[in-house]
Length: 437
Image (tube, rainbow, N blue to C red):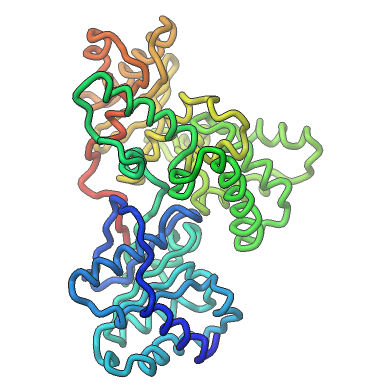
């Protein structure tokens, strides 16, 4: 990175309109006095949220020349040394001297590609008249390392692919239904959402392009985000672990069985390596491991965890056949909707029943299934609802089902149509999972 390159980038930026796009539900605050960090997987929409925030500032009278947007994966900025970071603000003052004393808004994309960025951002925050927004991978911005480096100066927002409500908006569909025909439109839209997921580019792509885009995402996440950035050496093993997780979303993870299965394919590795790779996937935001609810931390650690993945569409890159396992995909979509709002969820099981999601502190429980037309399925789901009600007396809960059910069953088991619940989920907690220090 050098002075002339930065001056060129700044000049180009103000001479071109900001990229346009469809608005998301998340709105970033601009006056908190904190460094605003956006963390999430690649292509989930972090950059768009920066541009959307810049447009908000323009609407409130902030001059475009007061804003700097840089993507540190831009080849023009590489190679980059920590001592060069100060050029970013100095060159801006040279290019726009009339705004040297005005408040500056700094938007830094993929900030993990800039060595030493934490100390530099902290110093700017403390010494300059500046608002700072950064985006990066989940593993870099959703860790205690960031909180330690910023020393209480940052707030992190977790960015997910589109929710179902956002998917409906992107598709131009009404978010409410007053007739059976309109309800069926939204139910069909949910099936499409579960098949292809919520990555914005995939949602807006032609159907024939979607599998190819998802395959590319999977390859980039494996080779760049995991192998290069996270230092994964055994790429073949990591791909096998990643493939297992995406082929088995919404199922319990048995690490001992996974260990045996992977070794049976000829892979050679130790148990600690497998645990480390699973932790890496979770830290990268590609996989979630949901613990069981237990008062004892030892029991939580010893019981299997339930797997969920970041996007149901990405499953297609690892499991051919877009129509497979829609019930498991629905459970993962419900989990992701809950996870958007708060972090601490558990699954629960006793000898007779298993509950998909529960939050004993807030006294919520949720179960989901595709249909209830089989007696065994109905009995299983009724047992799960009973488990939630007896374990957490007075708790609120729903059984979320895709196919229609009889009025009596709906009342007895608190059934909510899946499309309706995903469009308007309840508020689970006072403190949401958006903007945590």
